[in-house]
Length: 160
View 1 (tube, rainbow, N blue to C red):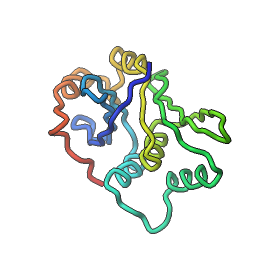
View 2 (tube, rainbow, N blue to C red):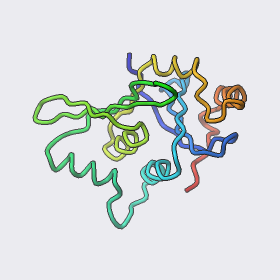
View 3 (cartoon, rainbow, N blue to C red):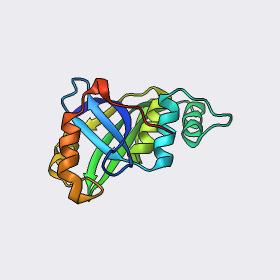
View 4 (cartoon, helix red, strand yellow):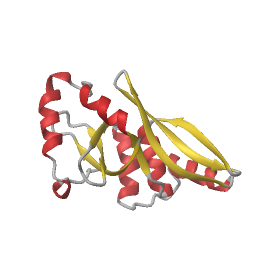
């Protein structure tokens, strides 16, 4: 089953790395995805409605998809293998459904620009809970406690 998610972008207080926090609408399920600084910047620019003088890569991709008369229906974080998340960009092209493999950070940056919904397969969330997904495994337990204690209203903004 796919769960629709909202997005917050933060800095992990333990590793000091950018982290995407995907939360279900009720705030009961959270999926953290660590990303690089440039990936976080691409997402933060859109979240903060900052327009760049020239199109960024995700803007270009959205424009190409639009100009080809295709539509981004949704993105789905679809799998977790060997501590690596996978995503699919679901398009409609000439009335046909098409799913394109992508990194979650790219798919999310594109979804934000296209105002497309973001979903996660529930088994991915379940597998992430049982997986040692923290970049530094010695801090995994501390990080899990931090994630569980997050209040959606108190989450800070990612600083570019």
